[in-house]
Length: 293
Image (cartoon, rainbow, N blue to C red; front, side, top):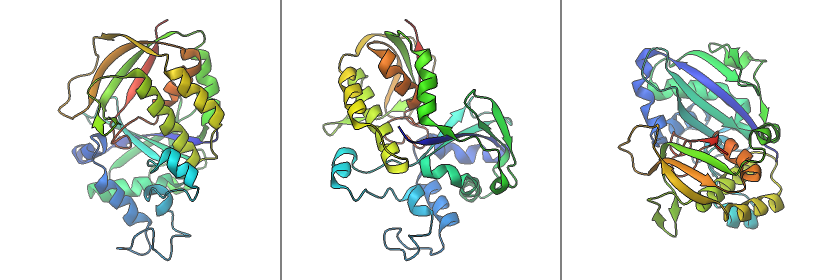
């Protein structure tokens, strides 16, 4: 599986904390427009018809352009965005951190995301910036001159999967915590309860789609096998949830699942970085996986 990942933690200026709320509640249109503004050389022009589309980075970041391959379009339909915002340790005080994961082609353009945050909040938003390496150790970056950073840890998803595999050795049961509301649609209807097999197959589809559109692709035979494995996953019971209630629509809660997680577990762990469902790029569909047996 060929896809890169950059994991950023952005220290927020106190006055900017309230302004980033939409980035964590599924409402990202304003940020997408801000990102377009800092990228574009021809304003008020569609990415699909812009004469600079061959050199501008905006299409690769926000245009969700369909593949020219009709088979890929049939399989994945419209691609997701190559970035994910999430709340890191809560957004509540002057030490608040905003998480931002960049995927594939977006990894090399992280300074644009900082500029877009300033544009989005109409003020200086970032007062500190770190990126996490494979051991989750924070690497300090210069937030004032991010374009000069030469120590940015760029993680290979294939290496992360190999690392996660040790965590799920012989694993048959997991705890799945939905950290923010999950909105998945099946047969035209939004789910109102956890359906483990559909959850996992949807996640596999999202991961493979991101790799196809923003990386070097995936082993389709492997993903078909994993999707088949997902059909044997069962819901054992719903557990007391650690997360507080939300006014947002979607499935929440904590669940114990049983199944072949020695194979599926590493991809679920990877899924923690990309979220799932509607609004996944903007805080929705976040989850955590814990091995319990």
